[in-house]
Length: 382
Image 1 (tube, rainbow, N blue to C red):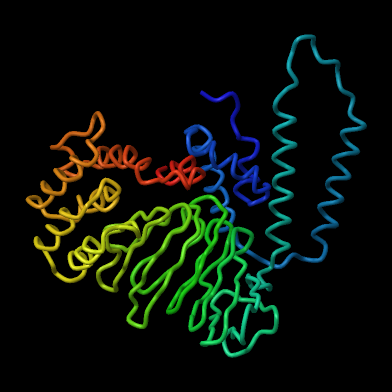
Image 2: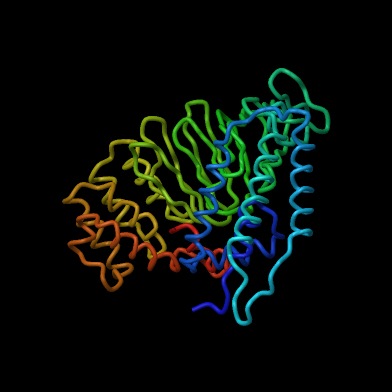
């Protein structure tokens, strides 16, 4: 299907070493190439294993010993008599394998010894307005947010966080946010209250924001996340996709132009497009959090437009058997299920059929004003 693969660029892509244009090209390729995507997952697994290696301070003579060993090996190679290689025979794989393995071992050993854990990972913070604080101290024009530190803004303060090398987060007034962890395979904040605006340009599922009622998992996007004093949150996605996840509750996939409410003890509500009819939005909140039951569901179904298949698809697993039939009928009338998706399978919540229907619906959820999102959406379904 493809004239070429992106295998040679996968490691650099995983480490954030490609230019934005190259990263976009690799991301598009991974969205549709199963072979490269499988290899990319192996690279990420290797990174996770490397992060588990023990850390210790290197002894002073370490590098002298490594350099001496390499010099001795080079002298032996030069002095060794090598018989001519038979015609037509490939160079033996063993010397290349040994050389490559030795080089990797030296680099890995050096990397482990050089980092002794004395420098705590931290993100750069820029003051935008007022006097933001990191823990108990005010920052000047710049500051450093370490793992475990809280960044707080008052009513007259704003700040911007540089998220490693993968994006930016603007912190609005009256906000409290903490850096939970930062490493090659995961960057995570905790938003206790207030508002932040995130812009992330990285592979999916590298950046997360914990809230009191759900976790926002970045799938390559820009979004606004608000948390009130009661721990409820409101997510607005302006580009790409975000997944809202809570253990023991249904997840919500929120595309550009859509929003979703979460509540402590309930988890994510049902996502909806921000131009949805007000009657639908009110009924949806009653259904999700107010115990509205069948009456609220009636109002959701009655006010659904073709674009609101986003909401109806999410409602299938959130409704009991009898009500699920009504949701199915309304969804099917707005967008008939694709081949291979049966009524019986959808009502039984067959995961493969629901996924196939979701894929068919996705183009309908995108608008002509978001061509880049429309081209790249398959990134999130792997």
